[in-house]
Image (cartoon, rainbow, N blue to C red; front, side, top):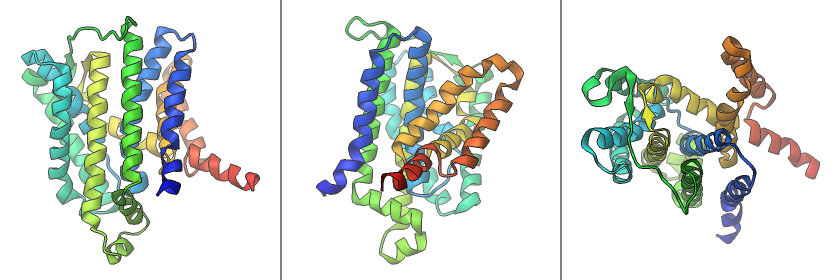
Amino acid sequence: MRKHLGPTYVPVLIVAASIVLVSLLPLTNFQVRMATLLFIFSVVVLGKNLLMGYAGQISLGHGAFFGLGGYVVAVGAARYGLSPWLLTAGSLPIAGIVAWIIGRPILKLRGYHLAMATLAFGSIFAMFLTNAVDLTGGPDGLALDMASVRLFGMTSRWSWYWVCGLVLVVVMYLLASVLDSPTGREMRAIHDSETAAGVLGIDVAKAKLHAFVISAIFATLAGCCFVMFDRYITPHSAGILRSIEFVTMTVVGGLGSPIGSIVGAAIFVVLPQFLTVFHEYEQAILGLILIVILVLLPKGIVPSIAARLRPRRA
């Protein structure tokens, strides 16, 4: 047990140390904002990696769960004056129940059928947010009015840096705990072969559902953090493009790699800021860079680089 425990929790220590070290740098407010957004999106991608990289299931609907968390907080606080923190705590079991309800039937599908089913769920939820104008604000979105968060006399931006950094570390620890448990080993077995896992006595449907529910809760938590930090949300945050972005972050960083999840999120958070000088060609250049990365590093950035360094060590 102890032999397996070490490597599983090493990424948690690396990320925690990195968050502390980065805070010592003379960062501008914009750079602090980018780092905070990186922490938030990394939480979603970690959940996606659990589902895709370990359980081997494809979902194109996690933008809906991200939006679910954001809109529960925004609507509850803006329309009914409830505490955003209490709404965040309440949104997590709601997300788990929703994921369990929709996951039971759709996770019986495989391959592109599963992808299309989750895509349909995300599309329906985005349409609801757009059309329910009285509740969600419609296409214009909804603003969140809440008191500034200030920890130990720090500015609001630095306070959110530490809050979201702590959330990321806790999520990474929970992910490591899941992977180190019998449930995590069942998920990895399903990833290799659902048929073989079933022959070995693993309840395939149950393990897949666990991965889906956990990843949905992570995405919802990230959505709550996002709307409290940004104080504004629109249906775009829960749309299909957002779901595709989460999948791309997961694949580019590397399936089955917690550190890869953060690297993949960083590519989408940081790289576009350097491409703004190209104006209308920004998206095209970003797409070209992603294609080059996937061609040269087909397993994702972190696993591919690790695989190339391994023979040199030997």
